[in-house]
Image (cartoon, rainbow over all chains, first blue to last red):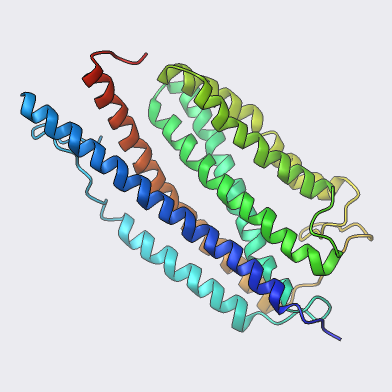
Length: 49
Length: 246
């Protein structure tokens, strides 16, 4: 008889997809931070010029 | 790379090709999920948990792909001395580590109902964990070395040496006695969770591999762009402090 392993399948899928989504969000957050900092430096540099 | 020369303002515009790749990655990953849930048949002895296999292997493949690219990038850096290869190396190792970790955790979830344990010091599991730790140490090494070029050189040499662990993991289940199933090649008779793949299973499996490869491409491109922006930021910071990094 085939065992009921639905919960384990769901847990496996959740780990994979939440992991990927989490990494995508970390990329978006870091990208936004770096963009803000670069813009700040660029504006300061233009002011000096 | 990031700055437009005449305006001195950052160019954060997304490359035209990146958006279709993002869409393709999202759609193919969704299609892979639908194939796994609705098209691939349920394995009789293990039940639904066997469906974790498609993403478990695809994650491991993506992780190893990242480590392979990092090694090529390390060779590229040592040959040319161009810092862009260092950025490629960091991007691919970071993504490789994420996917390898997801593969280890999902494998552990699959193992629980099949092997009746979350973890065992099987050659495949042990070597996969060693790979993850080796590449975690890569980032520790980077954070401990001063100077951009010196850091890149140390990291490149380490990435090449560390890559030895990747084929070691791949071949561990083919050489050593193991309970881990072998997909291609002979399996140990004592292996648990071995199953024969039907045609729909094979189709789903290879579609999953392709989808995760496209996903890797999209993530890698974004992470590479982030890396180049971080380099620009470091240059700005060095200029504002009046010094220059080695």
